[in-house]
Image (cartoon, rainbow, N blue to C red; front, top):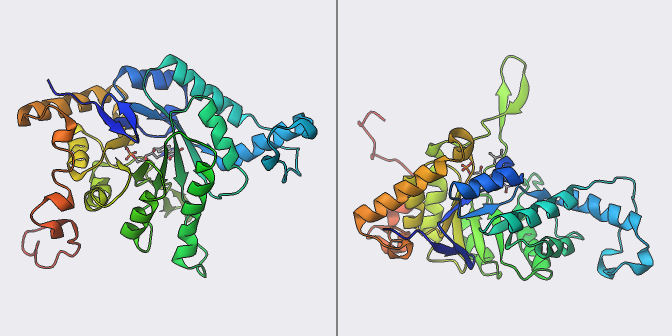
Length: 331
Ligand SMILES: Cc1cc2nc3c(=O)[nH]c(=O)nc-3n(C[C@H](O)[C@H](O)[C@H](O)COP(=O)(O)O)c2cc1C
């Protein structure tokens, strides 16, 4: 019988499928179901940097500044009017998830600056989060900025957050980059424990009747798998941290492909929306069956077996032009 257990970012997982950060990981009942149907770990819905900042203002408004324990956070509170309890709810979700499940719980922060808020990452750690995923990306629309200036944000955020937490930290990034492989390699050497390739964002579409911008498909399709598959395969032997694959993973076979490319784990959301959380059981069964058929007892026995470094034709992952390849094949 195949053993699907593995490690990701130093966390012991019963299998490599994480429930990705989404609306399905924002509620304790959903989280309990995800655990029941087999998720290896849960990445909670991201809390937004903005929500943390609002909560900080609320804290400051409610307490005597002179007795505030953390002087490093005292220098910027000038607007106490907005009060929100998103951070409080998030902390409750973390501690509930920790108390009621036995799988690792990864907190997630959507961050766009490295300033002022990173101290609060330690509060997520104190609430019981086993790891922290930083969901970092804004579309670079300052066309005067150099690529390095845009990318510096990632490094600044990691540096600041790591000052405040000792749980494993991962970065969930975008594929929009001038020199993607070099960026991934440099990020992996910052002391983070995981890189998640690649987040899938809100995309625009155009309503041709109303001449307005609308939301494109929110959920992925299996056809979106190759982007992360290519980069996991190219980078898995070049990085100093674990890689997790996300986007377009809709079947057990797709999970196997990512593991063969060198991923340590995968994160799934769309397939759970489309087919229900119970579909996790089908995906896990398919992985187990495949491992049994191939004679693999553990994931380590085949992880990275079809990464770029392991195959006879490494150029296969770098081929981007069709040239004559499909000529006359009716594609
Ligand atoms: C409705 C929805 C909400 C999401 N919210 C978040 C989020 O808060 N933070 C985050 O890092 N990713 C978020 N994601 C992205 C997913 O975590 C995942 O990486 C992405 O959807 C690609 O995986 P998939 O193809 O399995 O959906 C969201 C995705 C969906 C569909």
